[in-house]
Image (cartoon, rainbow, N blue to C red; front, top):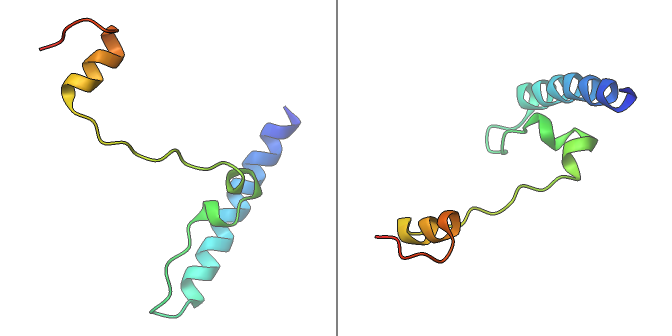
Length: 68
C-alpha cells in the first residue's frame, strides 16, 4: 500500500512538472509527458508494436489449427 501511495503522489508531481516544462519550453522543443518525469514509469518501457496479419493472430489465439 505504501508503494501505491508513492505512485499516486509521483503521478501528481509528474503531471505538474510536465505542465511547467511545457508552458516554458521553446516552440521547437518536443512537449514533455508526465511519464518523462515519473521515476516509477521511467523504468518501465513500453513494448514495441508488432504488425501482424489476421491469420497470424488467429494462429496465436487458436494454436496451430488452420485458420482461414
